[in-house]
Structure formats: structure tokens, C-alpha cells
Image (tube, rainbow over all chains, first blue to last red; front, side):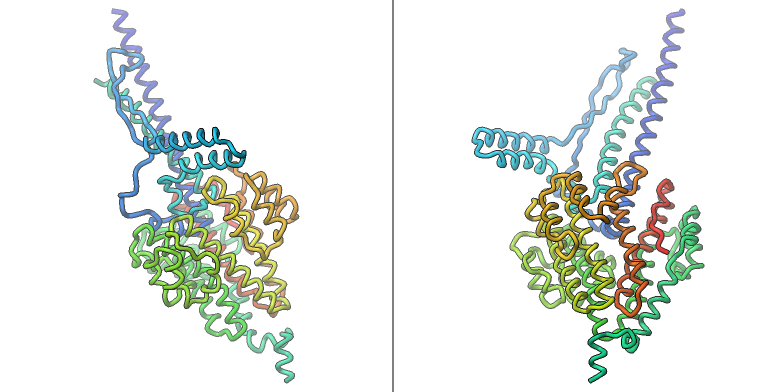
Length: 178
Length: 357
């Protein structure tokens, strides 16, 4: 009997903890979004209101692919293995990683062919730059973006990752309900 | 003959023959620029409608009267600009040479911005009807709508720019490459560099107080562009040689500072270059990227405001027209900044506007 009571206590505590986590995660999400929009406003201050607006966003969707994708898997709830919840994971889009591998190969080749140090520096830079060029929405607004715009993009990326965390915690809570 | 002699030397007393009315009206406009007390009122507004109410008691009057509520920040920005444009057009319509050329030079900068806006919009498949209202009214020219036909810079030059005053600034940036974001940015900065240098030389040729005032302002503009281009190019595909071709040479940094900037690899290097120049060292020292610091762009804006306010200390020169325009633009930026803070309910940095008078 007392075992059952203990179990109930544990469940209740677990539920409260998860709710706490969810609220904290949502607060973080809200903060990241707020900071992101604020920095967008700051970029408008520097670049002009019409330079950071919907006019710079492409209409056709063909060339746009998202930089992140999510996968879902089931996993047992850590504290209560009898229940399962959905685990949401976020990954950087694969073709970006592929291109990163390709350029790393080139770098190795040039290492072997090593003629001068400057060549090595160039191909190192290439690696960083190729990854950044593809589909970077930052470049829609200005090929030389100011710091505030770059920081805004970082905040929005953090917001995306945080929203996935929220989804995981939410599904854990749902599992407890069932 | 004596009259021609006066004209050449541009004696103070001869200035008023042609330009006395215009300078007077410009100074009158300048007195309408918002003061610190006005800004204190604006900062305390809770909503954009409050802001509209407070602006009614300033020189702006009922400029937002016909706008549908809820007000948007972009609408406020457009309306603020309309008023400024009307004032500028009035002065331009009443001007005679050489002031007309001086005022036209000022508009070339806006033309360059409009061209870049239209090309970027065309690159992103935006229809021209959506883009035209967003162009700066001071920078329109006849063939402007033909821009979205161009897909390389050669086409752009031959179809559109060759008949405009911007043709002489195009110079080296013609190439067969397709216009992508980086090329567009390079074109923008190359055009602007040629324009700035041409404007600087023209002001020098005018001599007298105009040269004194304008050359200092334009030299600072050139140096500021060199710093900002360098700082923003870290982490992009712009190579160092390409970058160094974008630096205007009419500033204090030419030639040693620009050469050092061309070699810079990170923001620390840029700061070291600024160490050699007293005013720029002070600007870099006050700035930082931590929350609570002023950003470098803010310090540059502040310095620009200081130079423009000082332009009004001398009389009988054309610099007052340029300075007035730039000060009003800063005022627009301030009001838009306060509006954004109010609209986003993010009041922490609402005091980051730059007080002018």
C-alpha cells in the first residue's frame, strides 16, 4: 500500500518538475524571440526601414529549403520506464553537412599537394565560407550584414531549438496524463 | 565686371543675393527639429496613438491624421519622410546654380539606394508595383522602372543608368556576371565611393565656408564607410582585394589607414587602425558589443550629428542644406526607433535615440 502511495507521490513530483521545466523553456523561447525581433528593429535603425522588410524575402519557394529538420522517436520516460513519450530531435539539414564533407576532402588533398602555406589558408577559409553561403537567409537583406542582423539570426535559431525542447517536455507531460 | 568678381569670390554679402531666402528658410526649418523635451514626452508614450498625439504639438502637426489605426511603424516612417521631402523640394525648386548642382549631388546618394532596392527586389521576384512605393522620393529618375529588366550589370548600365547622372560613377563595376547579392552589394559600394569622391571634389572646388564644412563631413562619411565595410565583411565571401576597392579615398584614412584596413582580419585589427586617428580612437573606445554598451554604429551616428550641428555655426554656405537634411533623417530614425520600442513593448533601450539639439 505504501509503495503505491510512494508511486503516487513520485508521479506528482515528476509532474510538477516537468511543468516547471516547460514554463522555463517557454519563457526562454519568448525571450529569444523578443531579442530577435528587437535586434531586427535595431538593424532597421541602421540600414533603413525598407532594407529589412518583406520586400527582401523571396516569393518563389523553389530555392528555399529549411536549414533544420526534426525527427521523432519514441523513448521510455526516464523516471517511469513503463510509459513512453515522443522524443523530438533537431538536426541540421543533411545536404549542408554533405557539402562540408566535400570541402574537407579538398582540404586534405591540398594538404598533400602542399605548395605554399597561403594555399592552405585559402582552402580553410573555403570550408567556412561554403557552409555559410548556401541558403543563408541573412544574405537576402545585405551581402555585408551588420552585427545586429547576425545576432538576430542567432537568436531566432536558438528559438527554433528551444521550441523543439518544449515539444519534448510537452509530450512527456502528456505521457504522464495517459 | 565687378559683379562677376563678387560672384567668383562668393563674398558673404553676395551670397544673400541668390541664396539668402533659402538659407533663411533652412534655418527656420532647423528650429523645428525636435528638442530633448519633445523626446522625453515621446519616450513616455504607451502606444503608437499616444505618440501620434504628442507629435501633433510639434512641427509635424497632423501628418498622421489620415492614417488608419492601428498605426504601423513603417507608415510612420513613410509619413515622416514625406514631410522632409516636401521641404527639400521647396528649396530645390527655388535654387539657382551652383546650389542646384549641390542639391542634385545630395540626391544621387538616394538614387543609388533606390537602384539597389529595385534590383534586390527583382532578384527575389517581387513585382515592380510593390517596390516603387518603397523607393526614396528624393532618388527617383525617369528610367527607374526599367531596372527590373536588367540581370547583369552590363544590361543595367546600358539600359538604365547611361542616361542618368550616375553614369559617370559606374566606372569599373561593369561585368558580365549575373547580379547576385554579393555583386549587388559591390555595385552599391563602388557607386557610392565614386559618388562620394566626386561630391568631395566638387565641394572643394566651391571653396570658402562650403568647402570647410562639407569636406569635413564627407571625409568622415568616407572613413565611416571604410570601417563599416571592413567590419561587416568578416565572415562573408568578400575577398580583401575586392574589399579594398570599395574604400572611398576622400577621408582622413587615405592612404595609410585604408591600406591597413585592407589587411585587417578581425575587429581587433580594425580597432588598432583607428588608434592612429584621435577622433576615431575615441569612437571605438566608447563602443562595444556587450548589452548596455553603445554600438559602433551608434557612436558614428552621434559624431555625424555633432558635425552637422556645427555646420550651422557658419553662415553663407551651402553646407546648411546638407546638414539640415541629415539632421532630419536622424530625427526620423529616432522617432522610428522609439516607435519600434513602443510597438514591441521592449522599453529597455528606448533611450538609445541620439538627441540633436
